Image (cartoon, rainbow, N blue to C red; front, side, top):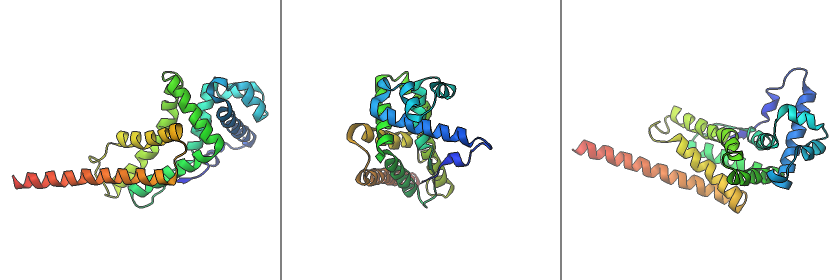
Length: 215
């Protein structure tokens, strides 16, 4: 996976000032979220840091929770899926890119704060995170799997995309929240574990096929 600022491809003609304002608000919201957490974050804090009127925020995001989710999700919108020749390398690249983003203090801090609040309020904040952030990350995993199927690396009946996405995204989320930013050792270990599981599944499938032929 590679990163690229997607907003450059979706820029509305004649609206550079609005785009610049939204970028400033997003960056300010991430920093305030990282510094204060969701509970102590306020629209006033973000507006002051971004240098805009509070009404400018409310025109785009009706609540601070929606702004907080946007601020984190917008970071991961920068991740795009690149073809590295194999599912393992595609996944490695994506996890490394996510780890790089999380190493930024404001992004990593905002991400951890949002996940912590999601755990405290699963039906409120947690639901918005699942609908926005988790959906984005799951889509990236699904794209890598679809490419692997297209090039004949795996069969579509060999992988549960939702389960794989849960394992990858859940592992990154847990490491970020509980033990710190995923480092290279974590990335390598996770990819090796996934490869071992995939090999074991292939071995079982081959053994089952041979057994069926011997009957």
